[in-house]
Image (cartoon, rainbow, N blue to C red; front, side, top):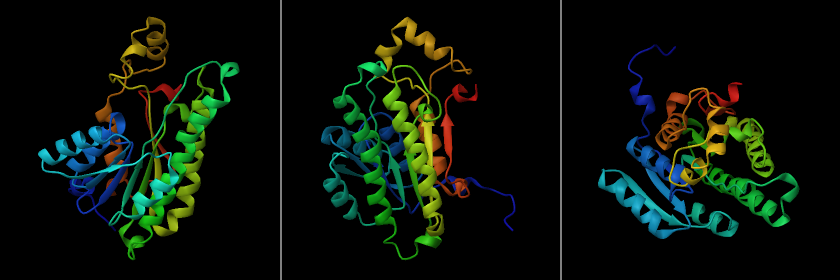
Length: 260
């Protein structure tokens, strides 16, 4: 039986190889930097070379190990090729997503396809390619593995003008559970991290609108928006041995939104 003691080492990721999809900016970038700080060798994947180069340079300047992979996650052929070429893989942070807020009756097939393609299909293909790579490791069952799907609190609740987004995020929560059950015999854990609205330069224009800001803040009991480093810290925890018994569930980082 394990006995309580100094458990700080359980939060470390030394010797682990991590792939972060959508790592050029926002949540993905913050996660890549945090995972490198925890000791992981990180492969950052996104479409934009300049953003990847900047993030990799920051990690290396702080003594971390990082590599850039230019790849569009909606290109399934490229995703499979790039991930298959990795030397090894222990952890996937599956971070892809978009949203086109609009009334349900106004949703065009074009917008529907765009959000479904990125939020579900690309996430599925990326996870599939990553798990294939993980299973190449002969001692995978003893070494373990981890898939972390970045979803949203909107995968647990509903909201007006977000029918397609909620559809996709609920789908990814179901996918997380099913994949966790299927991969448990290989000791590959699968969980989601589901943030609330975050305070970033991209969301600033949204919260400059008083009506929208009030609608959001009225629903967060803690009374503030989330921060990128709070989501990144949660991802490090889920990826680490500190969460070794956690699979098939969602870590909701929402300030209490979904508790109501």
